[in-house]
Length: 315
Image (cartoon, rainbow, N blue to C red; front, side):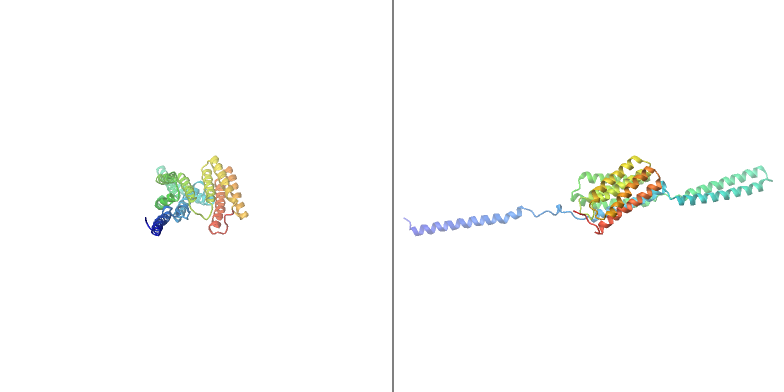
């Protein structure tokens, strides 16, 4: 029979050994737990996108090129038209005077000489018309192509960033399709189609902006997009879609104006949009152009104040 003291020592040793094994296993398990739970992902945190800002700036640049040339065609400055007509009238008077003097000199001459003088007068008139047509400005299509090439390049660097921030395949595909159509319209030298497609491209950048941190509510730029869309429709003689677009602009403004603390500037935007709507109904191209320029200036003033942090989003 074993010594009771020896038995107690043996049992105690076994207990200590088991305790050590259990504690070691527990500590090992605890040390592995943090490895199983990964650190918080930074993808869920929105950030600013300099590439997207650069893309939007380049699209805005192209849009202004289109506007300049389109407005010259559909809503030219009346003063310039009078200057051109005055110049034409003066040239016509000179031609008339030349004809009279030639007729006086050829009265005693042969009939064949008279016909030759008339042909010379006609040729002079045709040259004057040709020179007048040459003075008409045409869009600088190589410059358009250069700018749209820059947009393609910026988008190539920006697209992976938008996807990483949550842009769907549909969003990126629609942007690509719109950009391709815009490029083709430049090849075809279609000024109006290119203008509308550039504005649509601008709209799609606003959807991407919602995936990033911005200094202003993206819906504010939607107001600008719809206002421009209405203007382009109206100047193209499409009153119904123009009025629908200005209605959308006012709806977007309703969601933004509650955040704008400056009530005076807020009223300026709303009033200018309503005045543009009335101008569309009047169907005068210069009135539409002027009211659109005022509305854009008011909207951009609000955008600038947000960017300068002079006004902020209220709760």
